[in-house]
Image (cartoon, rainbow, N blue to C red):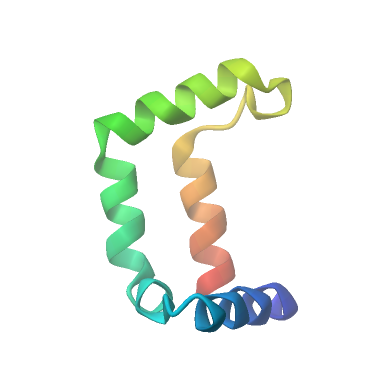
Length: 68
């Protein structure tokens, strides 16, 4: 998992978006609390069967685990 974290950091550096990675907890909280993001996620779940049983909170927890 460390390689994935490093790849994310490398891409953030390329895109000049390291601040997003450094403040990931704030941004993930914003995403989780957003009704619009919940609607987008639910629409995604309906469109793609492999995401059907995944909650937005599950995805947020996965990202937190990678970035922590």
